[in-house]
Length: 110
Length: 116
Image 1 (cartoon, rainbow over the protein chains, first blue to last red):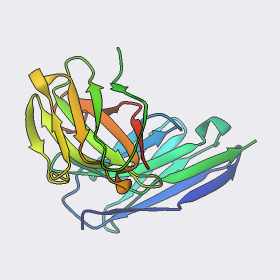
Image 2: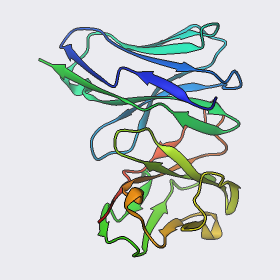
Image 3: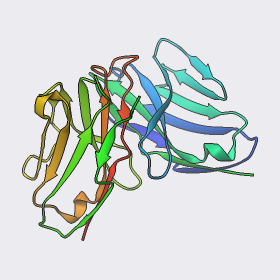
């Protein structure tokens, strides 16, 4: 019940396209849902986050869509760029602990 | 501001040997986390400190792993003896306080451990 399921495992997108990564959870006690971006050899860095009382949050080219009833949330990267090539992790917070998804490796080709 | 510092960046040891990792959090950050990230998986919390006290170590294999945070600043994570399945990246993160909204966790670059 503490798991966060993430898909797809890998994603290849052409420059300018839309990248979509999905996550699902079971535990309704989760109260904060961040997305992290990780480049090779670096630690994860917070990209964007949402609370369950909001259905969508947008920051630049990055948007989180949140469906509380379905217990699903997704990251949309608009106008994907080669510099967006990285591994993306969704996460969910419960009593101060972050539970991470398994990650999605995104490759954006020119 | 300076980020979370970790050392060493890479370590290769044989099984049954011991190893220690060091973390220096961002100045003023009260909460410190150690995560284990196995290749192809997301980070898994091992232990969480609030100042120099342990908040959660439920996922720490205490028969071989130990961690301390002296004086509520730097922290060390030790593995003794190491097993092959300990091969992973060990990430340290810090935050101003508990991971509430707005209390972002900042991650260090990690230490990649290979156990042969």
